[in-house]
Image (cartoon, rainbow, N blue to C red; front, side, top):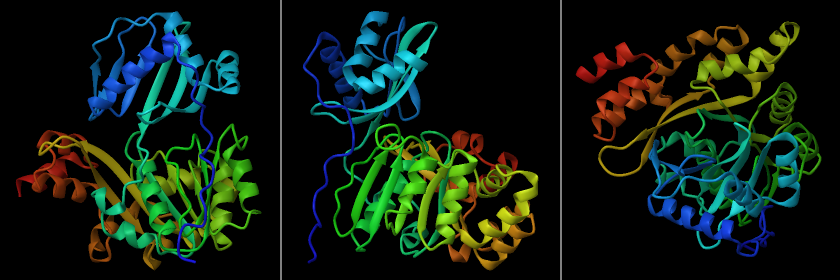
Length: 374
């Protein structure tokens, strides 16, 4: 049987609620933001609504928000559990589906004793890898049978989109069991050739570590961990990769060598030699992304550093010489590796990004400036 193996219920999200004044005004704001291709919307008491368009914050044509209205908007979007958490700990993360528009990743919080909301738009359709302006080698990583693949970068650098596109590529090719652990669920997958289960932090599991521990007893082939944010989750992810699973995850690091060092530094000094050996055996690749505003047309484009774990790289990790990783990347471009600055220079020479942005976000600005002159 080659068709879809069945359609699962949609991942956890807040159900559409009866229209209220807050709900109607919220929908107006979100529709305006979508028309302006905004990635984020910020609703803060005492300020006009703001939106982020191609990385730039811009005010919206709307009156200053009152405390009562913002709190009502939180109550309109959040489930009872999420709203109770907001009242209790002054922070709550959840998903919201705006009727007829899009899904959003929402954080409701307090600032200066008043409610505030940060919303990120989640595109409903998973984009194909070919549409993301990513290096071709990333598509090859979706053929890996096992190991650890990390996608890193700052918040908003497109990590979730890259991972979703990789999962979708595997969904269309294999007959495997994929489990995703997310905070919150972003792209909603439909099981095609693979069976995909999506678990959301808070709604379906108490923590990434707990979800990952139990996921390994659920017969997965591929596991996506939203973020390796603590030692327990990191240790479980590496162990899962070591025992024959393909594990995909993210870290908030800016390059490959920093990623390796961040993982090692999570462990107590007495365990670091052991984890270097385990990481050297399991790590398959590190993809580090930085997003740029395009100058040739509206939109964003990523500059991507790629580290592939060759025998030479594995030796550097084992021997605590991760500071030499940038040199290995530069001398192995034929294999598909690429440094951040080389990727930025390519975008500049292709007329996609400005010289000022290129130099500002470079790992080595002085060196890149000389490259751009050449």
